[in-house]
Length: 56
Image (tube, rainbow, N blue to C red):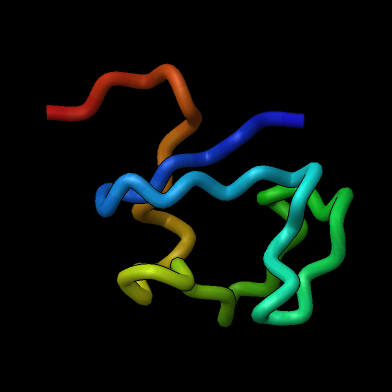
C-alpha cells in the first residue's frame, strides 16, 4: 500500500485511512472519493505525490 504526500507534508497512509473523514483503514489512495481533501490544508487529491518523490 503506497503512502501519498500532500505539499503541506500531510501523509495519507492507506493502512490508517482517514477516520475523521470516514475513510476506513485499508482504503487505497486511488479509491478515495473525488470529494476527499487533505485533512490538514484541504488540497484536492491531485496535489498529492507518492512518498519518496522529491518535489521542488
